[in-house]
Each structure stands twice: as C-alpha cells, then as structure tokens.
Length: 172
Image (cartoon, rainbow, N blue to C red; front, side, top):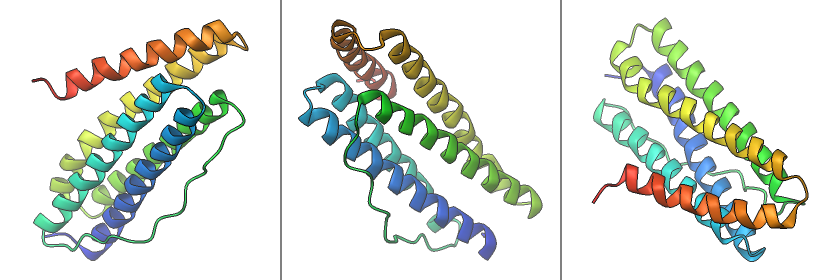
C-alpha cells in the first residue's frame, strides 16, 4: 500500500511523463513541417516512449492501492529557431526528469517504501540512457555546425537510430 506522500509524488511524476510525451510530440510536429523527417520520426518515438513511462507509473499506483490522477498538462512549446535549440531543450528536459526521479527515489528512502524504490530503479537506469542519448546527439549537432550537408546526413542518421532502437525495444 502506498502512503499518501508517495502517491502524491508518483502522481506528480505521472504528469511530468505526460508533459514529456506532449513536448516530444510538439517537437516532432515542428521537425516534420520543416522537412526534417528523421528528426520527426525520432521525436515521435520519444513521445511514445514517454507515454509508455507514464502508463507504467499509472498501473503501479493503481495496483499498489493508490489512485493515479490524470491532470491538466502545461502546453508545450511549438516552435524553435533551429533544430539545435530544440535538442538543447530536449537535453535540459531529460536532466529535469532525472532530477524528479531522483527526488522520488529519495522520498521512498525516507518513507522506507522499498517496493516503490525497487520499482523506480528502472526509471533511474532509463534516465541515464536518455541523458546520454541526448548529450550524444547534441555533440553531433555541434560537430555539424551550420553545414547543410551535415544536417541532411544527421537527419538521415537519426532516422536510422530510431529504427534500430525501435527494433531493440520491440523485437518481432
């Protein structure tokens, strides 16, 4: 059974994951209308993953005797000056999500809720991967600079990254 404090904290994380999904969906839309199909596909996949993270939390809260809450979401940003600016926002957002997960883990220690602590370890590992991916992408973008040919290759490569990670996540 979840304490009210942990239930509240988990519901806050549910909202954060939902807002993450919306943020990446908005980024996908921006990229798509700017002809960046590979980046758009990457962002659509990220949006789907964040929604899956949210649903995993919803199920956990409900199964542990709590009540998962679906709340209003903050509207995401809808335009960017450059794709680099968009990926910088993605990276900063992943750092924010990691901090939120870490705070949640801290609360489980304080309340000695080791079942929830154990459940959250998947999120801790996932955030390490998410931050590393975002940082790696930013490093590549910085190498490209303003080179249009580099942007074309990057867009194509990130689309391949999406296909590869999608296969790894959902093997058929």
